[in-house]
Length: 339
Image (tube, rainbow, N blue to C red):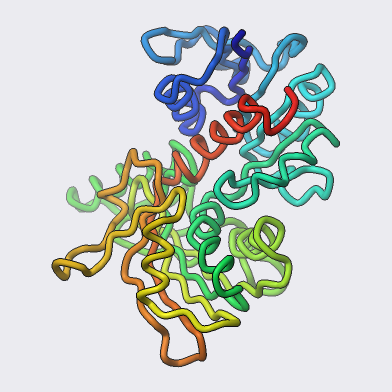
């Protein structure tokens, strides 16, 4: 018997990807229901060779639903995820609202699947931030082998992380520059075309942005609370795919060659490194639509004892959001939790 699935936020970028990935991976679903706000009711979204009519989230009865894959925005999730959970569904939530709730596990299947055992406290499971997901997937084998003491990461994040309106803004600004039009920021505080913006989310009292804070606290919750993290997050004019330059300080000795071998054999990682020619590194444009985190430019950092540097890229709409959520649902379906 298959599962009855509801996809909340089905008309958004992540919602579309969730539906696509459920079909691609042949998730055992007998019924898939697309939910969104009232303004989207009646629209059709694709699920394999089917077209699903969008239903109204505000009036939907979650009774009988097994799993909810939710990505509607934090405020909406705060209201509707508990309603779905109370009706008996397990909610896998992509928003930021539940991530640091001590009664809600924050899961990356390749990193901490054992934390899924705690999901029945609220029947809600949180999907981490996109930039955190790809980093902890890459950090996991290093931490297991030599224990990470400190991480310094600089991110270069695509506009799709801000939604469709941001992608439209980049497209329109880029087109406008070639037509001698002055870019007018709307989604972002400054021009995004041909630019780099060192602000993702709002600034906090200590000068960090909320995105940077997320990477710090989520890494500690997922991987190890003793790891120190310094994050700097930058938005760049790329449509899909996040990139990160990561510097790791380890407690124990680990060579670059050993690190490469760990990456080569780790689950969810593809190593692309300087084995044959100098251009063997991955970029966001090359990994769109891929499931793995791609690691390149692995090298030793001679400025600290036991230091490793690497570059990693990932499709933020897939592994950074939709795929990770579906992988959590697969863990549930395979008996790692009770549905």
